[in-house]
Structure formats: C-alpha cells, structure tokens
Image (cartoon, rainbow, N blue to C red; front, side, top):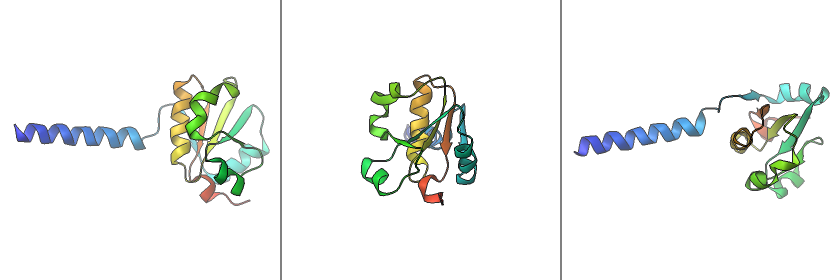
Length: 122
C-alpha cells in the first residue's frame, strides 16, 4: 500500500515538473539576439512585457507594452489575435507562463524571449 502511494506521489511530481518546464506546443522561443532582429522587422508583431509596473519603469525595451502577468487574462483583448505576440519578462519564466495563457486564449502566433531582460543588451 505504501509503495503504491509513493509511486502515485512520484508520478504527480514528475507530471507537475513536466507541465511547469516543458514549453507548450506552438510557442516559439527566441533569444535576445534574435529579438533584436524581430524588433528591426516589426511587421505584423506586437510586443508585451509581463513584468510588474515597477520593473517595467526601471528598465524596458521601447516597443514593448507593459501588461503584467497577473492582469494578462483580463487584458488579453487589448491584443490582436491576427498578429504575432512577442512576450518578455525578467528571466523568461513569467513570459513562458504568459505565452501559455495567450495560447489558451486563442492566440495562434506566440513567441517567448528566453533569458528575458536579464539577457538583453541594447
């Protein structure tokens, strides 16, 4: 009985970690260098920064609009589903979560900036 319980707990932990760290299907990942190319060729893209307003005020990339992750579900309608959404945060974790939220909300083209602002150098 105890072994079965331990296996169930272990299975749950593995599942949780998998869900947390494996990128969702259909989410593109780029690095800071690739982001610079995206910014020079804006085209049909929209850029959002999901950090807190204080973090955003401290340092942000000019073309990025601040929509904190905690507000993204309520404010997703401010974005066009017809355009690609490029998402950044401080390290890439919140933006990865934001990308999952956007995909679940029906956005087709979603891109996460790996390394976030920590890897950005102008």
